[in-house]
Length: 435
Image (tube, rainbow, N blue to C red; front, side, top):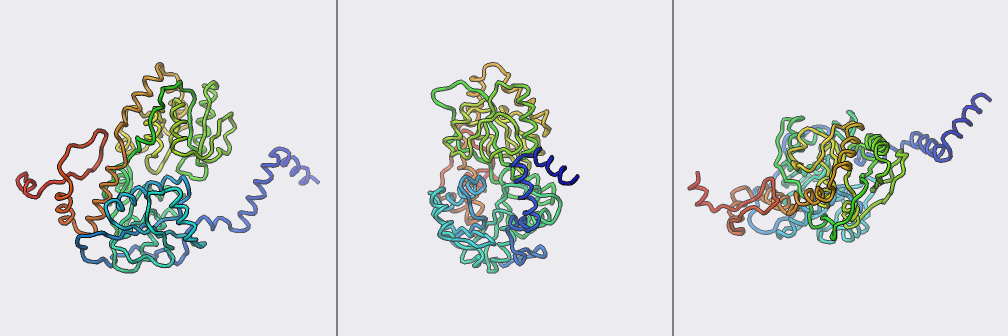
């Protein structure tokens, strides 16, 4: 009876939702449902770092076939969107791409093809099941640590292998098996292409290995200030509770503290519903880029947290005149060197304080215009161009690519807003005179 009364008191305290959560948690543990989140068959996990892999001789001129290995894309996936921007660039350069998608539970190729065509309509690449083998390509690009294992276990033929890095993925996990399985992939004999200088610095610090840097981009045509200008109020938060790297619990405490400081400021949330955030919020769910731009254009500041690389959200906010509050992280300033960004130590008090300072500042309209002006002209074109160059160089050899590009692209000054590595064609005779 004592146990029954105690259980009844707990049930009353947590309510129907709490009871449902506890039942689900017990079922989750009893059935081993966590295994569903580990998306690799044990046979596809490499036991050792390969010393070398078969590579074909340099290719001649002409179109190439490039494979990309990834998990199946979901609508709105930022990581897949960045990958598909690179696929579009290769296709625009005359090459053919193939998407090798992997799901250990089974892949419906027709359904995944329909998803790609509907949500990334400019991508022409064919979709294939990676479990059937990875081959028939000049080069293959891994896009995450799981796919790096697959490039070896499912791609046994001679091909050039590259690794497009968007995050320092060992930090996705506690220091256990998944952490180590991710960390070992940076030592695979692939050419590493790191998105941004920060990620290159993180990999270098942990492994001593360098990477080729593909510069970060921002679509300043999709994200821009509203016209006509409107009064701004409130803050915005991108909620992804299921991804530890997004710092959800830290954000919840920071937002609660901010609300105590400024209860008059509405808190807008988009993405996944913010479980545990017991505050009055305006929840928007998933938004298209146009809807997101509208939200950024109406708000004063945004909370943009990420602990494995700079989040794309920060510059998108800036482009619409919304001031991002970003967590301090080693080397982050290498990528986001923008004076309009508000940096804060990753504590709830510091993040809430930074948000409060932004909404308290005078002349919000002037500051929003200055923030948007700071990213005018930014695009993904430099990143796309650099990735195409690196892939072509890997397959054909650096000399062949230099001569081809010198014939194709005239010399020109960098465009406003471009940064990071860029390709400037230099005729061979000029290069020799300069040396």
